[in-house]
Length: 95
Image (tube, rainbow, N blue to C red; front, side):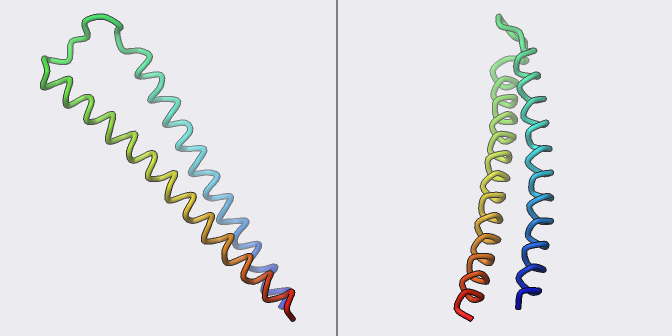
């Protein structure tokens, strides 16, 4: 039984490493987006009128929503992994 718990914990550790890689990639994306926003001119930007500005705003909003959704998925995956570990640990304590 201890070997099964060890295997599960090793698998979860590997999963968490992969999730950390995803978070790091997302961080790099966020930094790059901040650099792009910072590079925008402060006065009278030329977005080809209102239509262009609405399109650009929509694109930025979609990117932010995608980023937040990926963070939510990450939190959900971590919660599921921890639930499995806690269930296994509880079961091993009862034995």
